[in-house]
Image (cartoon, rainbow, N blue to C red; front, side, top):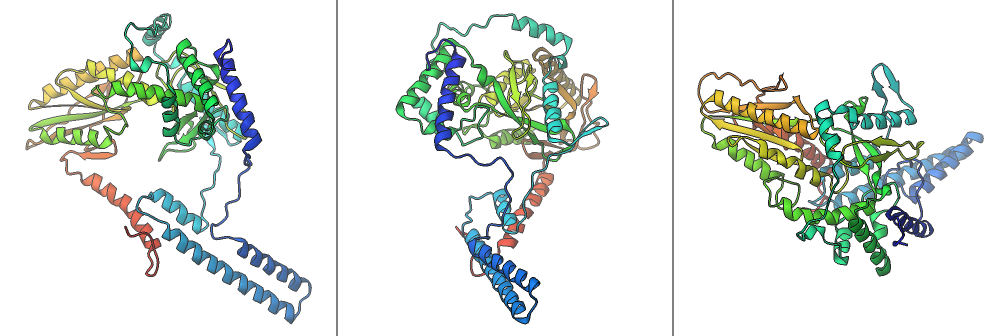
Length: 505
């Protein structure tokens, strides 16, 4: 089964066996949208309401005093049952709240108790002067937009020559030294990868992590042999190049613009398991480099503290520029093509993406940051910077404002040159710069540009969720935190009670 001549056929055999076993043992839910009911509705409420309707139908057909009294009694009894069920359900819900629950989950429960649900509706997309509202048209427009962003003609002519020259080179993964991340997988690594994985949505093959966790020892051995064969033969299965793309609207963006959706790719769980083990081997290398990643050792708070300390230590003037990269994951050059699938319950369509890495894959962010961290090798010695995934900031400080401006502009020009050689694009409109100065008097703002497009000089700048103002008072950031805290305070107002409530620990 896993020893066939073609790796793709072996992967398909494994997928067919797992899916057949799942079809025979695991029931499937209906694809139709279910009707949301209030959590306090139970069988007693249903029976009392059914009796109320029955009495009403009798009174409507035979109008008499006895039938009217019977209907009013049934209505009062049904209302009393619903109020009691609401009270008991609310007490049970509030008593289950602990300090670890998130405000988003809490508000969702509160609204569900009140019968308020966020219904799913297909947005109306506008492209020029044409509007699309049917599900199939919306799916096709989103797929074409995602493919157009990752199209080959979006590269400039200089990079196309570099791209063609690089693609003609034969890749050789063999090495004289034996590295830990190049060794074959072992059984404990496979089990560790399955334990660390969260129950996410399956890919095009329909296999979930829970199916792999319930495999017996023989099946796990065959799966391990298949992974080692893929790794040893350096043959990537064609099924793993397909993904179901889910469009997620970016926060605060217009839903009518197809460019305001983030394409989240649901790849195969088998591929993610193989990637998770590979990422564990690569993580031993990136921790030794001067980059930051979202793992447990270095977090966002460490990058924020490093940025804050560098700003507070300057004595004269300091320029901090946050550089924005346009479509960082969609424009990353790679070797093979990926087929992105359509939307469930609609007519399927296939859109071929010629470049870019799938957002939602395990190795996407890791490989991107290892690739983009090379940008620090091109910065001048007087310019410092930090990189957290695709959030890049560079800064320069000193007593001569003209020299600082020239050094930072030189660094920006080198970043632009590096991006041209690697197929990336910087946005001057979305990039921002702030001038921190301790000198008295009036100081002219610097002039920085990306390809002759001026970078806006602002009084406050957001980096990794923290708002830095010119005086470094953090007053704008505190005001923003106050607005966030008001939502939590509103929850406390809703949940307040004297006799019962949440866990006080």
